[in-house]
Image (cartoon, rainbow, N blue to C red; front, side):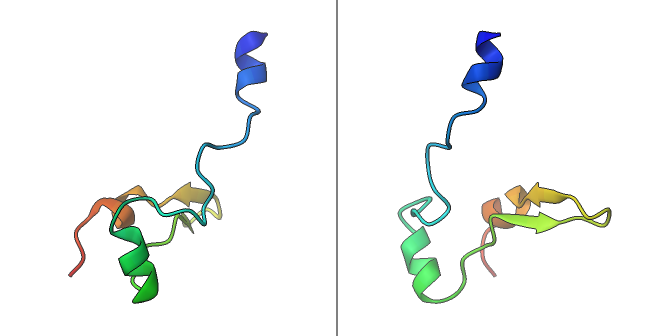
Length: 56
């Protein structure tokens, strides 16, 4: 019961806050990776690969 109540809290960081020290640099140059994407089945998924891979 307690575990279910803890899962309903707000996230620690909002999507508008910088995720790293380089995030503001990427945001200004419009190179910021999206936080999520829609997969082939229409589900919203976190964009872990796009955020962790180095920029080309």
